[in-house]
Image (cartoon, rainbow, N blue to C red):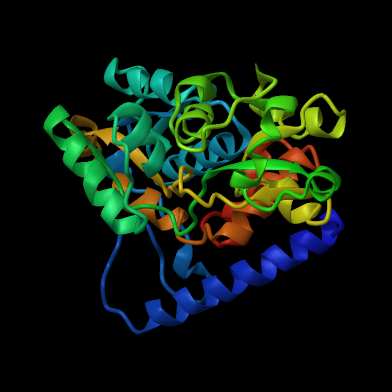
Length: 326
């Protein structure tokens, strides 16, 4: 297992490489962008624009670690760009978060293309390509007066996880290997898992599996129930810190029938906010998510879930390490 210091050094090295590359690119460009300054490592720095003063933006998020971190990253970045920012970072499930956007409780929140298309818009199939999924999301959002910004580099998906010891004992490699065994096993997942095709519904309808029981659990406890022996199987996320920090402890069963589509986070907002906030709104959000590869996101998740740092502090570390803020 990597120590917190070792992981932080590794992340800093990755981010430093990205910042350096962006700095070199900036030196060869004559474009002027209000959200950056030029020269060396300051090329990535977010610049406060007086034109944004007094424009209020409420940043929302759903109710788990990765969303808290993303919400804090976006909120702090927008504040650095000069906006008047407030947060509402524990909205709940995707249905609750999307309704909060529609009701004007938040100006925007990070959502996953797969979740948006399946859970909100009822699609049964999600494009595997990030840009194709983003384009389809835009087709659904724009007639409603809503829009989304470009996706993050990393994608995330639901996955069926178990302890390696359990997988070895039962001979599990794929989800289909649960045939004839699932009826003796307990499955845990988020409360909304019961209604989602990329969760319990897909396991039952596509794989034909029945479980001894399905138990809703807080997202933060999905590995705890495995560790304590309460759950045989748990619905987890592919970007979870536990998978990178403890690679020999947990196993993800291969989704051989494809019910767990990967989704890149996109910033979902309404078009009136985009018009009111001006060009720095979209530019700032797309700028600060540019370094969010899967290894970087797993490390940020680890700082919260493993090292027990506050999401706001982790977001600040990320923004500083990437050169977005001082």
